[in-house]
Length: 255
Image (cartoon, rainbow, N blue to C red):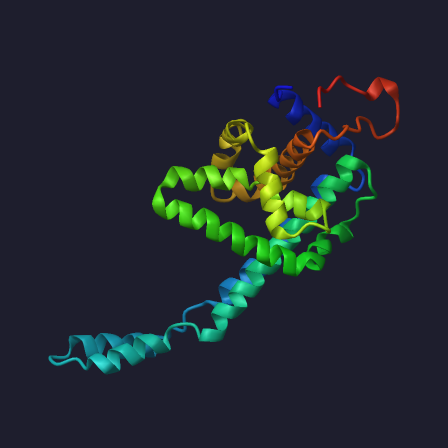
């Protein structure tokens, strides 16, 4: 059955309105955690620049015979220490794991499977599998992108559902998830691409300084919920309509 994007988005808005715990509240907590981790990573990577170092650099550059070795040592002393790069990678990775936790929360909300704010930490239980999936997917997409841009883009859509499969199937390894994602995305890559394009307006608005940050409180939960529903649509899962069980609350969704 052909995807109806309007109904898919309407379903997402219905879930946002009715969900308990609130999809928006959990999304706000997720964004706060990511913001804190991002700020810590930025602080770890901050450049060690002082006025004295800048003055020494300027004076040496203005001298008639600058010492290249001295300039190199001085500029290196302004760079973050090697450990800062490791800390940044670790914090960025933690942010991704919290993002997986938010996806788990959204899937539990759709399936009425006791969602809770604690789901935000569930991604950490998948650490080894997620790490291997990230490396494998990155290598495949990266290598194809080196050849031509288009094959890399196609590959990114081919494996887009791998993370959802990793969440749903603990018995499956990362390679199996990639293969299964390629199978269920067969004939749907363009469909998902068009769905992505339908959010371009929201993406542009979130890029506006100030107001964009506030808008993310809506766009991040909304867009992530739509993509979770799309995954449900691909796997042919039944959709749970209302939250009170009433027949009157069940709109006619074709997925």
